View 1: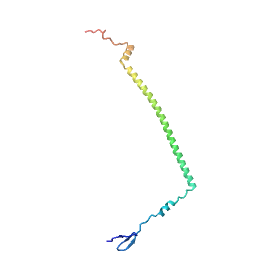
View 2 (view 1 turned 30 degrees about the vertical axis):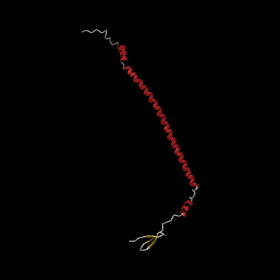
View 3 (view 1 turned 45 degrees about the vertical axis):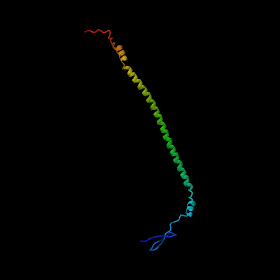
View 4 (view 1 turned 120 degrees about the vertical axis):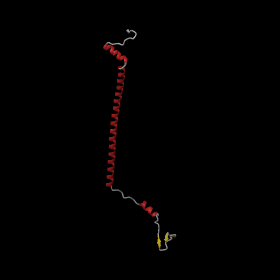
Length: 131
């Protein structure tokens, strides 16, 4: 069984042989190199093409949003018109219900029967009862 011993220089010593192991050290040079690297500028043709594509996308999005805004406005106007028609119909319905209630009342029925058929409600005090 091998027992490793660690020295100051991070060398691993084993009974069978000596192996040197050093951990990779990240120094300041690597960071300086990362910061110092620059990207290559884009070509003018590519920049112009990207601008045109971006402008076309913006125009397309604005056109689609205007179309949807127009459609929503049209639907809101239609809904407002339908609500006003429904309100008028509701008022007519209430008026017809009131008229039906008046036509079904006993006073109205007695007046119509009296006028058309010449029939009147008999007065109970003036009736003659034969036994």
